[in-house]
Image: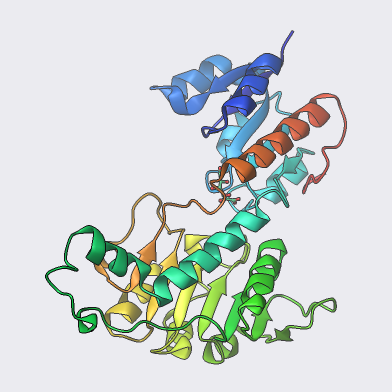
Length: 317
Ligand code: 8YV
């Protein structure tokens, strides 16, 4: 008999969905109109959950799945799962660690260059046919160079390191902050975020958000300064979004490149309206390559847990 799996978010790789369907009875909750009723009907049969990093799972939902043996997060951020609660129940929670590193780092660099070089406004200028009627080079203001800028990285995990490596190739001096200094890197360690912001031209958020809510506030943005840029490819809740909107409005920082927001998919109107921000719809890992590798890791986590083994990379068991 195939085990029953509850899936809370879509997976966009057909080959992964085919494998899931071949191995399991899949319950795709996001396709259900009445999700409460669906859980009431099928909750007792569920042995594994697949969820997104941003979606996670509530403790209430976990309690309604008495036969649950594994929570496979299709992502690296586990801030939306109560790990202590899962641990207390001996429930493995896994992530797709390492599978998306390169793509998330690539998007961080892409956002940096897009914001500093004002690629979006240049693109719009050409696409909307404004160039022939405004042929003077003065029609578009000068943008800013990325190469050589001081990059401050908040969170030097796998993604932070991959961003550092890429920025270093652009000749950027790299500094970072984290809960501790890392002995295996040559980048400058700055113990506090405020000092890092003060000494960076570009502040890149790559930290886990489990315990770091609202760390980027008005004081940090003021320290980053009027020529500074904020890039966030981690979690929206690391930033006090109202402080960011305010900082952009009063010119306290030069611009921002954001892939993540506090209340996705809702983006504050001030960010939508600002010409100094470049926005993405939480897509840093959204490549065929990353999502395929992530899907394979989810499949492995389910198989290991349901075979009675400790899933590789379980954070809680
Ligand atoms: C994904 C993420 O968007 O890894 C994470 O924590 O937020 C992203 O990679 C998401 O998990 C896909 O479901």
